[in-house]
Amino acid sequence: MDNHYKMRTEKLLIALNSEIEKKCLLQKEKYNVLRMKRLFITSCLCTILLFFFGYFYFNNLTSFICIFFIYQAIALVVGILIIFNFNRKVV
Image (cartoon, rainbow, N blue to C red; front, side, top):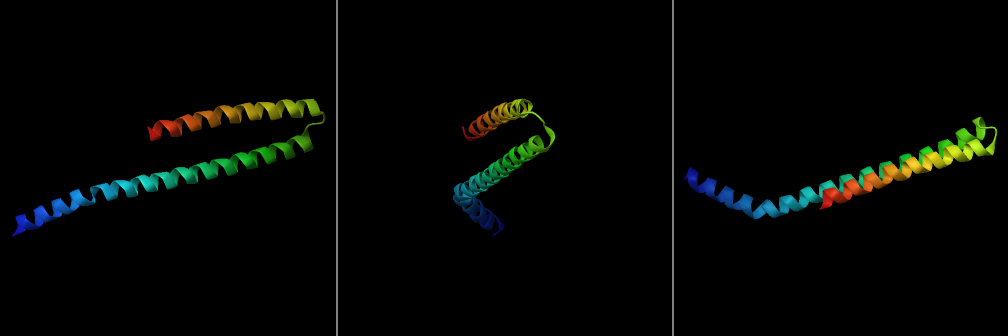
């Protein structure tokens, strides 16, 4: 009798395996979307803070523009690395 229940459980797990995999992939996708939202909001806040910091602490416009372009270059490099990392996980 115990063997019968064990076989039924194994058949049920095999039948549900694809559904379990779909749910896991869906949860991973939701987590990745949440991470990307947080990263986007953090980047926006950093840009706004950079403008305020530059407005109050830099006297000439040239140094502020240099700092802004350095920040944009760093953000671009980090963004490209993050995008490549997400594409590698998908494949």
